[in-house]
Amino acid sequence: MSWLPVLAVAGLVTFATRASFIALLGRVDLPPVLGRALRFVPPAVLSAIIFPEVLLHDGAPDLHLRNVRLLAGVIAAVVAWRTRNVVLTIAVGMAALWTAQAVLGA
Amino acid sequence: MSTRGAAGYIEPMSLASSRRAQGREFLAGCRDELPILLGVAPFGMIYGLLALDAGLPAFAAQAMSSVLFAGSAQLVATRLIREGAPAVVLVVTVLVVNLRHALYSASVAPRIKHLGMGWKALLSYLLTDEAYAVVASRYARDGDRADVSPHRHWYFLGAGLTLWAAWQCSTAAGVFLGAAVPRRWGLDFTLALTFIALVFPALEDLATTAAAIAAGILAVLAVGLPYKLGLVLAAVVGIGVGLVVEARRT
Image (cartoon, rainbow over all chains, first blue to last red):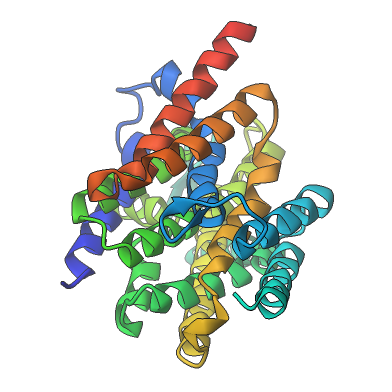
């Protein structure tokens, strides 16, 4: 299937979100509950991606250390928490993943 | 040519000096956006890599960067495409991820309400996190001064276009690299790593942390849901948990 029409619709939705209040100025205010909800979007969306990526192995939760993505993810999380450096987090995480794969033969 | 001044009267202004002022505003916007590009370029490259890894052709991967022009939504979309999620789920997920842009829209709306439809549409298209950050800090510097430049939208355009060009170039670099990197390197893991790096600054307090943990756990439990609905469901429940925790503490 071609993703291009889907991406076009997703693009229109994104544009509509950005143009919303610019186009409607003076006629509509941001609903208060939406304003309060917005700061929870990044933590919720980011975690909803991160947890399955590191915890699931072949579709099932795997909390054992032989799950190399969990091991590398935990190491990367420590780097992210201590340094807040995006590039360093990715570099250390990938190095940890490759090292763990080589050592554990996964 | 005449320009409506801040006080509302019509002041004459020569075409040449007006053009020069527009150029100055445009270049100032470009310049102020530059430091942010250092952080943006790696994301563009990772997006390009992940889009190819998800099975998108190079053309579609590049097209998404100009059609969506939204970093985190594009990264999330690559994962849904890799898993073969239905189109509706992809569109709804992109909507949730990009909802924050409505807040930016509300914030800049009063500043550009005097512009025509064409300008409003163009600046809306360019209203990303990174352009908003630069433009909002300019508005904050200007405050409520009466003598602000009538060409301030050119500053917005300069900042927005600079980011746009950097995003297209870094996407192209990632697509180019992605074609050369073998799958067994596991570069799809850079998505999780990128988001791990981004989530810690977002954990501002108990409510945001609760939102993150609830969404994460639910995403794991809901992985078997049909239509790959787990991600968007987990995000929406996480946002709800955050709101409830915040309401109980205040």
